[in-house]
Length: 384
Ligand SMILES: Cc1cc2nc3c(=O)[nH]c(=O)nc-3n(C[C@H](O)[C@H](O)[C@H](O)COP(=O)(O)OP(=O)(O)OC[C@H]3O[C@@H](n4cnc5c(N)ncnc54)[C@H](O)[C@@H]3O)c2cc1C
Image (cartoon, rainbow, N blue to C red; front, top):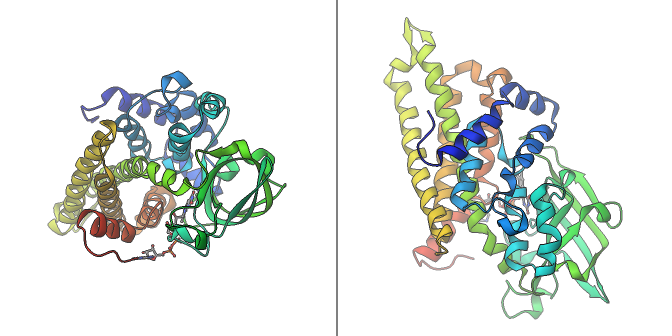
């Protein structure tokens, strides 16, 4: 049954997803491929341009509506992780880019001609402690020369452009550790092989992600986004939207697991009755469902605040935490009550199980969300 809210978006996305059944994603997962046809269809239908204002050729939708798109993709058995960057990475450009940059890139991102699917922030040594990044960008005339290394930069092989965070002033010379970093729009078509080397990382999920090595990578100075030195703040500005959207993906996964397992346990007969007749089976599923519903309320609260231009850091973080935990709880119940079949590739449970596990670590570790709530919401002492 399609919920009443945002019915039109839900049915349109579902209709598109219906052309990409479980077999499609299963096959791609097995081959470790990329769901190009699916992403093309989403792009053509304009769903990935949902958050780009109409004046730049986008959908001009609210974050609430955009989150419904992400939720439905995952709820239908797909994985938004293959393309969610195209929806939200442009936010940095939209909020902080010059009008020339916006005119130049946004319409082509909206049409799908340019893919801005990648954002390179994480580094192998700094990890979650982003202010310690080692990648530097030094201005020389009309260019910046970039040196350093990134890790876990997703979708580079399916992007034309990438947002990169680098230090432009050494940590020792800035009053605040969050100062002195800048963001650049890197044209991957020019950079790869000319200062930028991409090394794919095979990982538990079929997710295209990479190590990046930058050795004297030259980026035109006009590709600096916003002011030099304020890049970390610009990244933070985009996080609330990203967290709310990813919470919606998790929630989509959560509903997928609940639908899948409730159907299965209602028809799987062991000891002469459906396994779902046992309360030992029913209760963990019911508990996961309750938690998904609660996460969903927080997700809609976060989106509504964002759409009303009100602060939503606490709500966006709490929504992601609740959603990541509850989709994982549902995944565990779904796997457990499928018994051996939960491990069979053909049932899709093990694939979705792997996919939803990621949300506890990326885009942000759940521990770091707890730390944010402890420090910024509950005003307890700062721990780092
Ligand atoms: C498949 C995948 C795709 C990704 N895509 C991208 C991408 O496109 N762009 C990008 O920039 N990054 C990306 N990432 C990186 C991701 O954001 C980081 O992996 C994540 O933020 C955790 O950082 P880390 O791996 O360096 O872990 P670390 O910082 O080493 O932390 C490891 C764990 O230690 C714990 N921990 C660390 N510090 C603390 C603390 N102070 N208090 C309590 N617990 C703590 C947490 O549980 C954390 O999970 C991706 C990661 C994966 C796995």
